[in-house]
Image 1 (cartoon, rainbow, N blue to C red):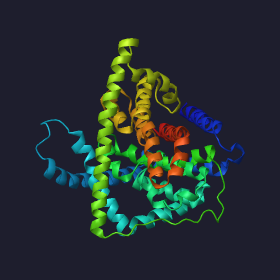
Image 2 (cartoon, helix red, strand yellow):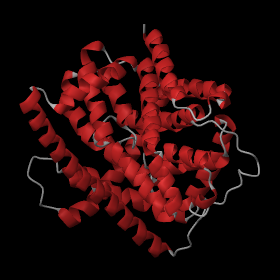
Image 3 (tube, rainbow, N blue to C red):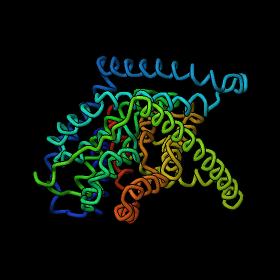
Image 4 (cartoon, rainbow, N blue to C red):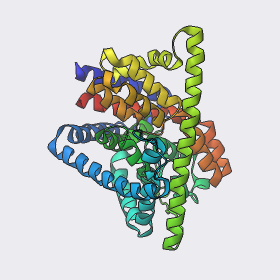
Length: 392
């Protein structure tokens, strides 16, 4: 039965992507099949083998250590202001982003990170049927984040045609940045965070190959990664401030979205007798079912999935934590991996704004295909959830 649901889900997701394809005749099926098989192998290894468990535990332990060191700095500045017995979300979840950001900056400065990203991107380009730039961008997005990644290719933006720009933006929205992984791991099981990170990378290529297929010539595929020269301490200052900005922005968005959802739920319940989130849960319930969520959980799962799309993944993870006691382990796993991406309405503005800040004309192009961008990135999340559902 799981296999039948899996195949049906693939058919639905691919059909939804095919309907909006820019070039239906140009779809390349070989790399799509290869990447689906690769996703299945990686998901099986990460979720169902001792080797995968070892990888998960190793990465999780590393982040536990890093979060412990981050806590030393946080406690020095904010020690004593937390309410006794309560977990202060801003301090425990968001503030460690500053320290993780610093470590990324150091790896970038000593030239370790650029080498890894460049050559991993080159390897991926042999598998995904896309260009080297697209492959580089997907890996770099998972390190730098959906807005910062465009800085590294800013000199290429004026020369990028719309179809290649769409793929770059889809990759950026489909993944998450390394600086924020530690925050996710305090809210959901680390194994689902890591699994989603890996599967989303290939999922972005798969959906892009259906919605936006094209061939990149050797002449078009030459690119130069921009690296700004800085002293070590200039870099430290920049990455510390960048990490703090991310934490503040996420915190501000949480305040706004949680308050707004609370207001809408109250008004909606007063008029219709059911919360707005629950109503959305019924709308998303069929999608929850096709990705493998047990029938008894589809409304609650659909509610959390819809919340992520309308607000952001943090709000949805908080909601998942509140109801996880009433959900099956399979549902928790499927919903968890669905949440690990930047695919939500606010990301349209973030990505369009980031590109516009570097090149106004291209930023306007991104804004025009913003909804289609979110559509594609959401299909990536559904595909990742489908693969996970088969393995749990």
